[in-house]
Length: 322
Ligand code: NAP
Image 1: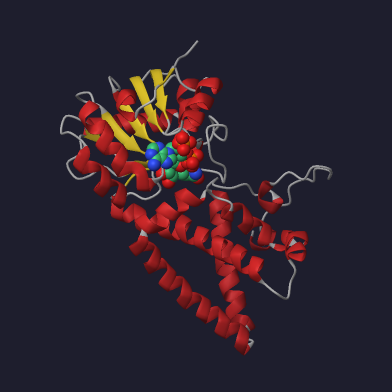
Image 2 (image 1 turned 30 degrees about the horizontal axis):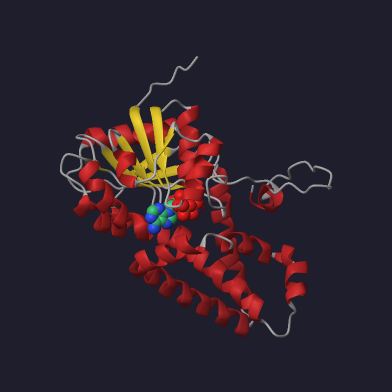
C-alpha cells in the first residue's frame, strides 16, 4: 500500500534520456504523480520509452506533452531548452510548474523564461547526479537517492511552487538546496565542469602520445588514467552545450587551475618535496570530507567491485590521520 502523497496529477517529461527516464522510474516508484506523459525528439526514443513502459502515455510533440500537466520537466541538453520552451509556452496549463534538469542554470533561465506565460511557475533545477551513460535504458529509480538537487528560482518566484518542486525531489530521494543561478554555475564550474574538461583533455593527450603506445595506455590504465576515462566517456552533445553555456564561470575556474598547475610544476622542477607533500595532504582531506558526508564510498578503488577477486574487508580509511 502506498503511503506517500501523490504530489502532482500529471507529470510531463520532455526528453527521456538518462535523467528523464530516471525521473520517470523514480516518480512511478514513489507515486509522485497520478500519470506520466513523455516525449522525446526521435521516434526511436519514443518507441523505446513505450516499450520500457516508462510513461502512461508517449506523445509525438512537446506541445501535446504539456497539455493539462501540472508539472513539466524539460530533460534535454541545455542548448535545446530555449527551443523547447518556445514550443510549450502557449500550451501550458494555468498554475503549471515548469522546471528543467540542466547542468547550467543562468543560460537556461535566459533561454527559457521569455517563452513562458505568466500563468505558469518557472522553477529551474539541477539534480547533481548522473553517470556516463545516455538514453532511456540508462536510467534507474535510485539515481537521485542521497544526491543533491539544486533549485534556482528566479527572483519573485512563487514560493508555493518552489516548495512543491522541492517536495517532489525529496520524494525521489534527493536533498534539496536553493541558490541563485549564477552561484550555481560558479559552484558547478569547479565541482563538475572543470573536472570533465580535465578528463577530456588528459584522455585526448594520452591518445596523441607518440612515445607510449595506445595499447600500453589501455593496459596500464589502472594507474589512475582509467578513472578519467569514465568521465571522458560522457555524452559529447551534453558537454559541448555545458561548456558553451557556462563559458564565463568555466574560464574563471580554468584560469585559477592553470595558476595552480604552474605552482605544482615549479615545485616538481625545483624538487620541492615539502610543497608537494603539503598540497597532497590538503587534497587528501577533501576526499575524506566527501566520504564522510556520504557522497562516495570509502571502499578501495572508488568502491568498484572486482569480479574474479575475493571480496576483501574494507580497510579503515585514512588510518594515518585518525
Ligand atoms: P540524454 O540521455 O542524452 O537524453 C537527452 C534527451 O533529450 C533524449 O530524450 C533526446 O531525445 C532529447 N533531446 C536531445 N536533443 C534534443 C533537442 N534538440 N530537442 C528536443 N529533445 C532533445 O541526456 P541526459 O544525460 O538525460 O541529460 C539531459 C539533461 O540533464 C541535460 O541538460 C544535462 O545537462 C542534464 N544533466 C545530466 C546529467 C548526467 O550525468 N547525464 C546529470 C545532471 C543533469 P532523442 O533520444 O530522441 O534524441
